[in-house]
Image (tube, rainbow, N blue to C red; front, side, top):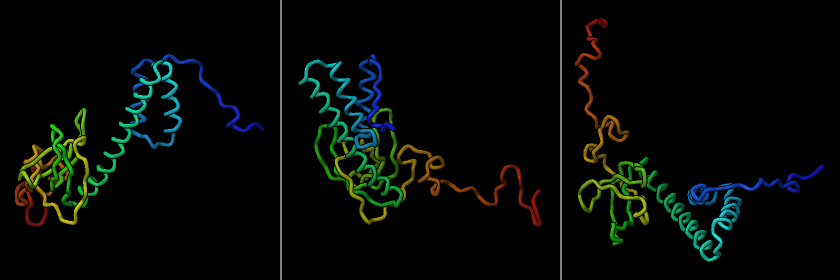
Length: 192
């Protein structure tokens, strides 16, 4: 009986467009430690050998992929802290850089994480600014959850409807129990 590793089938020559090669690199950047990561990097090297004959430029492309991978890993660590803080309603201490790269420390009350087409954002009440802020994920350099409870804020402060946001459901106006519901009136002894 032949061992499966001995028969290592190969694919016939493939024609990949640069966008398809970029998709391989992007997938590796998102999941650099996945179960097929080593094979993915081998495939990426093979693709780059064909698409980029200059070894120096090829190495730069690989390094940029690894750099993106490191950034993705760092965001996953930060996101795990933010997820726990959101679930436990705890204040978070953020390391943050503004658009000009100036670092700051922020004490925030996280409300939710949202995704635009390009970035993740932490929507939070910033204690320093005493106002709601949307913190872009690629500018968050660190996150540490404190033991201090974060108070619930009205979702309308963040441009959200209370009845559609999980954190705001408890803050949404509750219907008057005496008011008729869906055309029903509560009568003594039963319903009409």
